[in-house]
Image (cartoon, rainbow, N blue to C red; front, side, top):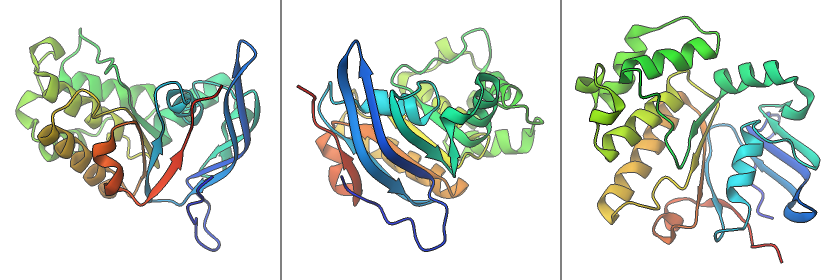
Length: 224
């Protein structure tokens, strides 16, 4: 597997060792070792069924692997209890899911405030405003999700992922349903927001259009 140099003396943002996962007795993932340095951007590549989404869920602490270690900033997620893992995720990991999962009963600003509340963080209205403006949706703070275009809703999902200044941003197939222009825009936004947070960015994709934009990658193959 490709190894992304974490740098001498630095704690990698992501470290996988002997990672395996099975579902119903079928092996989905088998990764001997892979590390990504803090602040680096990388791709998780592979066709549908290769385990990309499963790996995203493991890195997010939403799924416990069958065997092996998945550490974020030195913390093995499997060593945390459910409540600790939820708190760690809220404070250190930002996720942009394929299905955006915005809370329809809340405004855009309310969705971002909820993310901070669930992570046990104080509200920061100045940062909330800054993040929305940086994504070009500052005028949508009081809008409900159903009033947003798909592109605006995706920007809100990105805002929610970065509002707590995570060390790791995970994006699962963020460009698969987009045309070429919007594909480039979303990748630009994710990269810019990760750079602003000094966060590691991992994009899981089978979209060949963005392959050449990232030097570092982990290529997964469909399991037999």
